[in-house]
Amino acid sequence: MTTQSEQPAMVTPPTTTAASDDGVTPVTGWQGSSDYFALREYRAYDPHAVVDVLRGRVAGVIFRGMVPQETCQELATRFWASTHRKRRGVEAPGYYLGTYHYHKPTLTYLHESEEVAAGLDAVLDGLPADPLTAFYGGLADVLQREGVTVRLAEHDGRQACRALLRSWHGQGEYALAPHDDRSQCTEPQQADFEIQRVAEREVAALNICLENGGGGRLAYWNIQPDDESKRRLGLHYTGSPYPLASLSGIEMKWVDVNAGDVYVFNGAHVHAVEPNTDPALRRTTLAGMLGFRDDTTVISWT
Ligand SMILES: [Fe+2]
Image: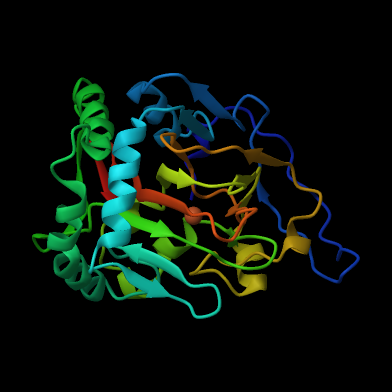
């Protein structure tokens, strides 16, 4: 559950649950005030702004041009050249390097994290400006003053994957269908994994944009769906996909994203990715999840 006491004033959620024109019942849930529901823009990295997201004080923040273009290009080149890069899907395949916890037993995720670690290191290490070190290092420095440690999620001494590189090319209205990132953190197969403690607080999504040829905006809805809506749609443990009709009438923002931008947002809100205007152009990001597992620890995973 969201620690709503840490969040600013709420606006009233929709009270109607009547079916929309296409027979889909609208999603209900928590909605933030106009002060809260924003992706605040910064010209340079400010880890305090990330803490605002982690503490539920603002929906999201974006650091424009935080990563130098040469670093973005180098990372993207290494990603596409990597023999550890995997393909997902058939018709409009996506590619990724790293692993993700979605819908897997804890031990499977940890095993895959270990398997891919060397391949990931080869892509991420030895850069003139390492964006992950800049991001997490800066965050750790700021939180240390509050007595908070930042580390990788772990289980029985085994560590989660440090980041995920991915490039999706979904077809249809969205390249990545409307979904939330918190539901997957309640997966029963991961009941023993500490990331589930973050789901009781704010689950934040980190995205570092490496290339974005055209389109590829983030769509971000002002709603954290309630359990009843998730169960009704059958996506209680997956958070995906929310039918578009179920989101009609809910406030939504489009966020332009360019190579070098780093953005962090509350993943409990429904969000999606717009397809590229030109299918030949790529949208590639370096991504991860993070959040407070308890008052003194922030953990990250993928
Ligand atoms: Fe997501």
